[in-house]
Image 1 (cartoon, helix red, strand yellow):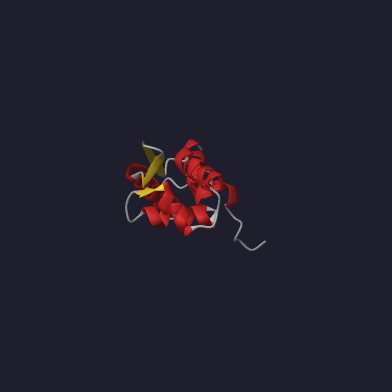
Image 2 (cartoon, rainbow, N blue to C red; image 1 turned 90 degrees about the horizontal axis):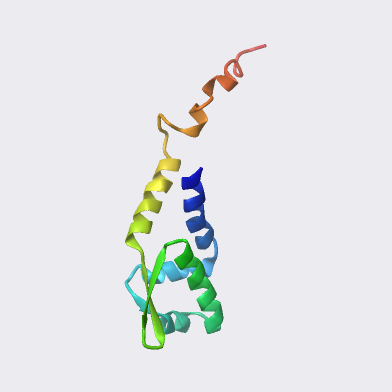
Length: 111
């Protein structure tokens, strides 16, 4: 259950189109907050809120330089999230649906 909680935070953060677009922008490399602001019509405080959520879930890292923050993707989180998504969308021996496989035994049998 803990893995689900950890990774659903990433998907929840990506559930906002602007945050998904920011992640897409960062896929090309590190960007200054001012460059991200140029793309969107939003106040700096709104961008800060979006970046806070992306940083809290681990997708984005930030570094301060002068008065600006430079953002980049966290490759480790991206890789782990890709693996998690692949795992939950693939058939496997240890799938949660097989934990109690006997529960539906006989469901398809004619009565």
